[in-house]
Image (cartoon, rainbow, N blue to C red; front, side, top):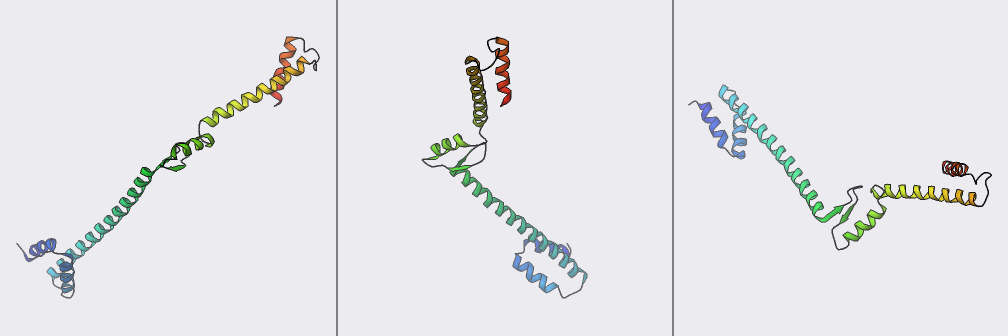
Length: 156
């Protein structure tokens, strides 16, 4: 086993403080083995720095995930618009009130369709009242009455 192998073995088992001290001692000499040790120390230092950066990244990600998990444990949300509500005694009523007004809830589509149908019915009722009151010529003819009713729907 060479001195270089012994040095590398020592380096792998050394504490960060011992590595730093050895690095400082070896900076001055210019022998081949010293240069190899300096290079090995530099590689080790870079590896440790990269590992510390990765650890810091994981710690930050872990904290973020814990915060997100706590939010999920303490809130509920609208599946259609994403509004959040605290999970407390009033959560059910708050969600119920929200569902009644949420613009993205599928019930709004049904309500718009209902309102459009009611508006059409109102137009037809108005046309039928006019036909019944004799406000149209030839309204006694069923075909003309149907045309008048269809025209009333198209006007709106």
